[in-house]
Length: 116
Length: 114
Image (cartoon, each protein chain N blue to C red):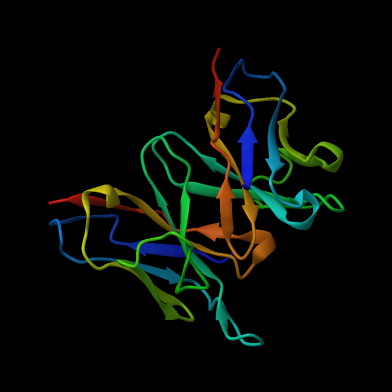
């Protein structure tokens, strides 16, 4: 069974760093792109970027380029999304998803709250 | 980037009636070399991640009830729920993956029971 399991909810202060994770299982992790999607409170879905764990090829939406870093460790079938300096506007639910034709399997989401 | 525009923003439909959601892309998402439309539909219920319903504009994902259907080509697409059930209350999103490395979602359509 294909599963993507994300790390737990985080509460951080502005300016702090953060790295959240997405662990894949039940399929060949290195053979599919993984995408990250942001959903701000009460809002729609925003595509952030993707990574191919097989070679770590990474692409970003222009809206998120320079704001976050996407990475992966194929040895442990895990993708990451990280911030070096969080802002209150980063408060959102973040989802990872496997990309086949479309995004066919999704993680359960990681809620990130940034508040002073 | 390709801009995806959904309409309406919300709609209320009686149980058993048809619900229709539209999605328009700012440029064609039909790839001529394989004649496939790179368009997907997702359903998101409160507190849950999105669920893939339709890909290639009209291919139903495994396990999705056949009351859900997708149609359209090029820049204009439709998701139809032929007979709305209570469990279909959700927000529905279209997504283009023509530009796979820079995909985009529509703004969402909220479906409620009238």
